[in-house]
Amino acid sequence: MSQISLPEASDLLLKLFTERIRVGAFFTTSAGARIRLDGFVVGATREAGLFIGNRPIPEISDAFINVFPFKEAGCVFSYGEKREIPPEVRTFLTSGLGESSLVIRFIVSEEILALFFTV
Image (cartoon, rainbow, N blue to C red; front, side, top):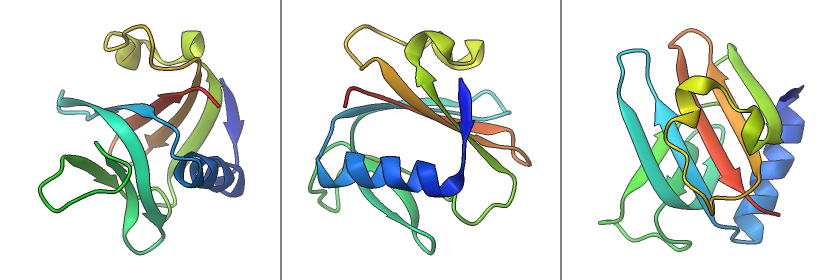
């Protein structure tokens, strides 16, 4: 996978948001928690963070993942093909999630959010 800048990651997230492109989201923590949510990028701001929801236009009772990649100085963004993702995330993959991936690594907390999609 190739490391990309915050502005490049932001542009990609904006494309996923505005075009309502379906994503497969996988979130892992250093404590071993793993979350999978198939849905959409439903918001991304510096203050509120990045929201992945299960519907393109969310309602209060919907499932979501919320992380803050725009505030934490220790985030690393990578973009590439699904086959290039880290092994700790690869175990949750199923077919049909898309061929491209954006991986956000939170250095301090050792959390990873991986988004899979086809643009």
